[in-house]
Length: 391
Image 1: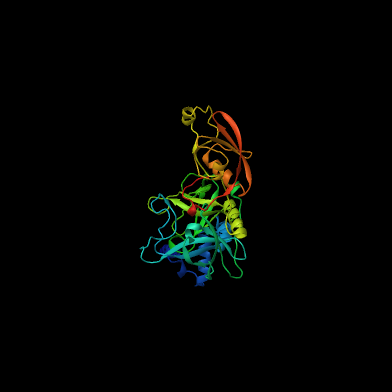
Image 2: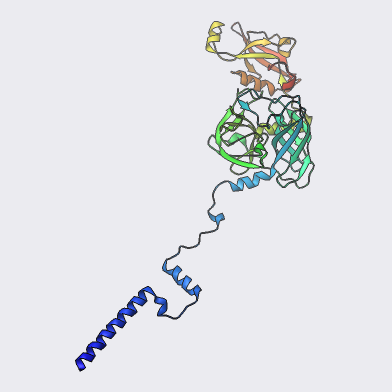
């Protein structure tokens, strides 16, 4: 009898322990007092080892936000109302001038562009083609303020225009050094493409010193792959520190949209032009009245010159400074003052740098003889007033 009771007790204990094991595994809450939900969540978080919270975004963010913040307030949108009869510049060229959509000739045109405030008294830089022929120019800042702009002056030969607005507390942009740029440097283009609002695009300097593109008379462009589209003209090209290094002016495009080939006027050139316009109302450049050709080895051999050094004079403007000094077609011009010249582009730059009304000694090769000719420097007319591009 006693043995049978012990067997029943053992079996009951075994069943009870098995039941408790099952409950502790499947329903542990039945065997423990109820705990607050917060304690349960905290315990669960500890059990699954949640990772620590990420640091603030500002601590890990990389990019050029600081440069954009520094430069963007000084970049404005420009709306220029134009007469309906004027054709858009460059419309038949692969070089697009981002100005705005084409509109019927019978209605007034509203051109869209950008500009850059360079001084606290309201001086702006933009492109000449943005405001050329405009009867009314409106400027809008990023803070929402608007003002009518006064056209101080333009320089069609470099496609630079200077405007002025009268508003208090104007933001300005720091000026960089375009001469220190290198191919591969990061740049930002800031403007108002397609009138969607201020936009910042990034890229690199693709090339320097681009010329002979047929866009302007004087060309020394910064080429960039930062996206530039219609409406960006006159806007800022800035470096990684947010300093102005160029004025966006043109794109190479078959469709009118960005193909990653944009051109900007170096800030050094734009600043010199602006200083002359603010001082004198225009830019005074030298002129001698010749049309030139590059002296290739083939030409030198045909003309029996014996050397390819210099620039061949193709034509001489009647009664121009060079003609009055005795320079003739067929002469080879080798020097302007102390500056040697070997290409038409070098000659153009050297002559333009001369002061109108001064005299300069020009080195010429004629029939194998070296001559020094003294020329009274004339004043170069603006591009729109010249029948042809002579020097």
